[in-house]
Length: 375
Image 1 (spheres, rainbow, N blue to C red):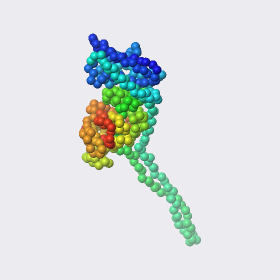
Image 2 (cartoon, helix red, strand yellow):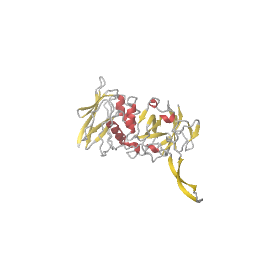
Image 3 (cartoon, rainbow, N blue to C red):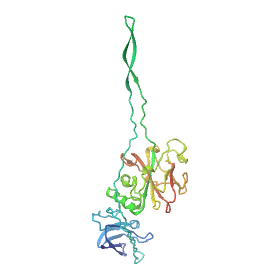
Image 4 (spheres, rainbow, N blue to C red):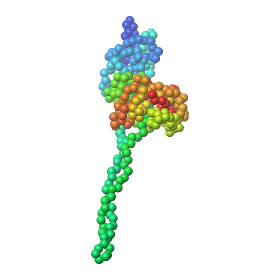
């Protein structure tokens, strides 16, 4: 067992207040250090482990979200920077939760809340499919026919001759399966977030998930970050609270002009996705999720300004949670070009953001997502 001292210093001019928390650590552990939500401290802030500078010049926003400190791990951790970069080292051990809250010396002093989180990593497995149907080709068939031949002796002799006939079989035309939108539930619990964040960090992303980064990505490196995010193995299910394969959470996009009904009997406009049902068994009902929706651009007429979304609970065709909700208006305009071999079909996609469900836990009944209006 080792004792570590975590110190947070408010380096604002004429302030320089600090708070120190000692921790007893027996094995590899990760801690989140953050300010209390209503803190009025301006910063910037430095974070030390013992007498070693771990983070420097952190902003108030970064400290409200929290930064991650890894202690007593045998694998070297990346050098922390002035951005919110998870530096966890994944292990297959689980540590107990520790949540001490030191008492600040005055209103300018930040409060640290270290919490340990277990980590699990897994390897993504995606498969690609082809929607092309082989085309049979015409074949020439030899068909024997019997041709009578008269001989001089006035007797009839049958002679076999071969007459080729051209027999054609129907030729199927290659077809594209109906376009569908795909619902991705990102669990916001600490174990799932640590696994997702570590994967994104290890694979070169500079955004680490909705929960780890405290919200949606910014436009810088957006497409690259989303392609790495798409490759995370959790989207196939069975990883922490990533429970269901996202291919089972999809809704076909209506191509016909006008209004029709989907398989649930709900009204569906052209170029919107049909009702997607999320049962309590598809997610952990005791965990809040942030849902995003991947929409193939080709499936919505190759143009998309935005698409409003209805979310209801208990029965389809309702909007009790969200009525005509408007996704993030900036990110929806950016293409993400998905190559073949990913968990969803290849092509250009737009992503609809900002659906954190349910409003309060636990989730008692199924929830239903449906595209309302495309603009």
